[in-house]
Length: 290
Image (tube, rainbow, N blue to C red):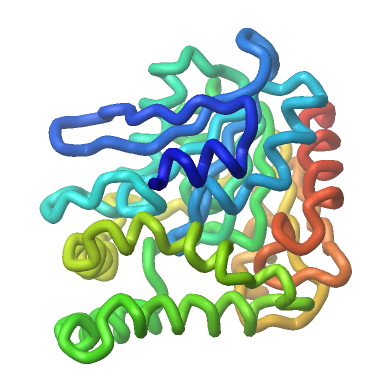
């Protein structure tokens, strides 16, 4: 079912399962002109390839090769119980996918915690990254928030009382609260965003528990000054209680040589869903900024 969802949402793309390590396989959608400039997109923890459906077509029409990478335990990628779910490890897997596809000098787009991942890719493998567009994602030092870690302490009770139906309801509430106009939060969207989690709910909970426990091998903040590519932080202009903290934005502004904040009116935590044309413009501008 999930390849059909992606195929319907993203015309002219091929969905692949790419192994990056034993027992670690990522879902990757690839479309556009082979050999052309690359835009690589990474959804956040509760996102999916489907979430970038409004960006992929216009970017391919503009001549870009579009690669959408679902990190481990995101979307329909694998959920191995014993893997390292730190942002550092996720960034290494994203880099491995780009290597396997011979993709260099990519404009990297990351949503929410995906922004923290692509920032790490740029630090670890600068030759892979031409520019960064972070959608509501700051230089996170952890794969999970305190609230997420508290919620995972209740994982056994979630499994016993309400299960996936309860989680699906919470996802709907979260998307609605985070939006300027929640009319985009339809049953189809909820189904697509949660399709991967629904396939094996127990594996999803166990992977989320591992994410809550993950520890980074090194801090990102001291290495932000190493970035030589443009970094654009896209923030929804409607107050929504999500996204990077003021301290994280200040850290990027103080340490990244070529940094700018782009505020998108009439959008919340999901600007690529509510105002995709504005996000496409930022991506194209970032591609030409260097």
